[in-house]
Length: 136
Ligand code: 5GP
Ligand code: ZN
Image (cartoon, rainbow, N blue to C red; front, side, top):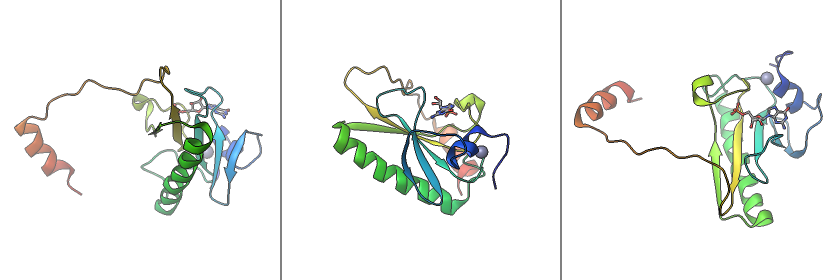
């Protein structure tokens, strides 16, 4: 399914041109228009899923395999030692385009990419509660 109001549906399906690194029947990999670092790419499914909660599981599998291949290519071609995979779900988590996408962000010495948090503490109470609530 496509969403006619969604810019990433249009990019993924070639209606809007993009700097494409890879394309097959399920996904397109493009360069981010406002990169966090040189080589920052996005993997877009061709069908519209707003986020991780909605994405089809087969498509999700294909996205991560594509990320692995693209990351290896970046490591070889750009000589980067590290790469972050980022995937935002919901406004509070930083999602700005509501068509599922995965970021692949190559990392360089001294770059300005900031994907860090203050480590907290897991209390015994939280641990007990969360294992109960979150076990699948
Ligand atoms: P989010 O914040 O939703 O996880 O990420 C959205 C990403 O899409 C941002 O990094 C932004 O730069 C990128 N982006 C937004 N519009 C376009 C566009 O029209 N073309 C490309 N190539 N990237 C886009
Ligand atoms: Zn879409």
